[in-house]
Image (cartoon, rainbow, N blue to C red):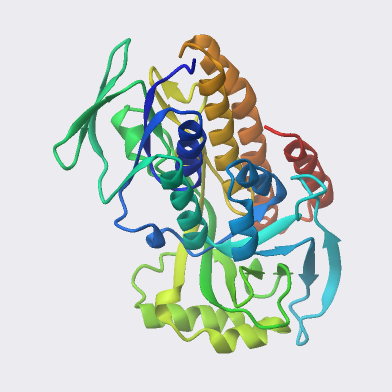
Length: 376
């Protein structure tokens, strides 16, 4: 018999939707809250490493993900010269196993749609446009009040509500989320035929200029600069700024730049990071995904870590008979150090670039690949 009978999951991103699916498949009643009014509002593009694909397969959505995304096994390194010269082609580690691609790009809203449809299919009750307004727990459960003035009682509440987690704040958990010192421009648009993988351009006026195919007809492109306050720019000015920064990069960038015409498809955010010291739970409320750990996308492991949190938490809740300290100890033993290692590695790569230091990138990437090749 599972350790819980009914669960509230807050946040329908990767960590939340995956947790809800795994629990519902095991016969546990799950309410899934998403504060956004529509799942299509969640993000632009995402790169998924093999270990993320492994977890998506365990959710029963691999066929849909494979059809919607764009898989590749090599990352290119290009020079910021007039030709965008390819200087290296690096085979990516198949961290999900030999029968899965090394990496896949796809539109984040499409991945969210696939996961939420799967959640509904397995019996999750999904509620958009609302969140909780109060949590009060005792030894037996958590009483929850919602923004629509309804209430509920649950055996467990899972806070998977992102970097600025309202659940974390409601618990009184103090966690400093700091800027890494870099900002990223992202644009979503059509895929030129010349883009068949992620290519990274290091140097030039920006730290990185790159792109990732997200489907047969789409990609997302990005440029990483020093973190700046870009909030005063209008959408048209944001588009113009990204196009101006891209002028230093050529090869496929020359085609991509011509497609950057829609200001609504450009956004700018800072790289941020935090790791919540264990424990991630306060009694019967637990934080996972970005609510507990977040990092810059320098090794593209954020989505994978969120999915791994979900599968480990759900596995323990289904296999154990009681929600006790032994369960939480087992959860943290499998998740805390692994997530911290990935966050630290992501931050180290960013810091080397900020300091203009030639660090041992191959060794660092190899150590992360070895770690993530092993199931969480």
